[in-house]
Structure formats: C-alpha cells, structure tokens
Image (cartoon, rainbow over all chains, first blue to last red):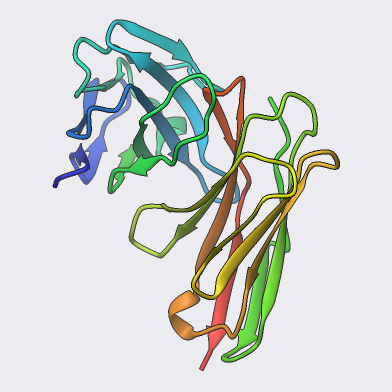
Length: 115
Length: 111
C-alpha cells in the first residue's frame, strides 16, 4: 500500500523557474492538502482540496497554484520560483471533509531550494 | 489565521521519566484536535484525533486528554524511552478543512 507519494524528494531551482511538485494517494481520500515547513514555524497550509474539481486557499497561498482533476492526484505548481519559497513541502490526505475528524496521512516531503 | 500554541518548545528527559506537554487552541468553533508524532527525516504520523470534550485516548504509553471549553489538550508519555524522541505536533482544523499546526514540542529522551 503506497499511501501518499510525493516527487521529487529534492529539487534545486533558479529564481524565476517553474516546477510542479507531484502528490498522489491511493487511499481514495477526498481531502488533500499541501503544507510548507520552515524553521521555527509549524506546518502552514498552502492549498487544499475537498474533492476532484474543488480547491481552496490555505494560510499561505501566494506564489502557488493547484488543481485537482482526479481524486488521486493533487499537484502543486510554482510558476516563478522565489528564494522565499525555499522550504520543505508536504502533501497530506485524509478521508473526511468538512469536519476534520479523520487523521491525515503525509507524504515523505520535498526539500526545495531556490537560488 | 488562528493561534495554535504548544509548550514547551523542547524537552529533554531521562529514560524512564514521565512527561507531558500542552497544546492550546481557540475554544470556539471546535471540530477536532489532532496529535502527530514526527521523527527526524520522516513524515508526521497520526497519534490521536480527538473530537469530544473530556476525551481521553491512549496508545501504549502515550495518552492525551482534551478540554474544548478552555481550549487545551495534554499529551502524556509514561516511562519515556529513547524511541519516543521526536517532535510532537498538534493541529486544529478550523472550519473542518483548514488545518492550523502548532510549532511542536521536540522531545529528546536521554538513555
């Protein structure tokens, strides 16, 4: 059982480059989300989705786009990378939406450096 | 933006000691309170999801309590072992879908 799979694990980008972080889950979870982890700060929600075709902004959405064309996949796009986006990114999924009462399963994380 | 606060920020205990830490969250519009364990170089893993005031959950030597009226949850570890060394995160789902995480309590258990 793969769970939540994130790719790549590591990435170095130049300022202004674009890239997509991939996230896929095989648990048929409706809820998927992206977080960034910065030193001294908790995980901060970037974007989330409560089902295919539905996305919404989290706490820190600027500079990121998402889409959810299937239940399984939830890619995160950086259109023009900036050094402030250097961070560790986590994708997570969970079964329920709207009540927050089921545990989240996290991917292994992507360490992104923007130079 | 909600404040989810955890204390202490870090803790060093001797093997065999019992310990506890706190998560504070807004007491209004409560949906659930999550606890996660995060080992270095791994991804967070769920410990507990608590939904009812007065809830007490237990998994082995780790237990948690919840007070939704005053907005806090305690995580207890009885007889700490080196393998308990990790960062413990709590998360509060505002509106049920927007999760706010605390900055975590980093626990080091000294053999």
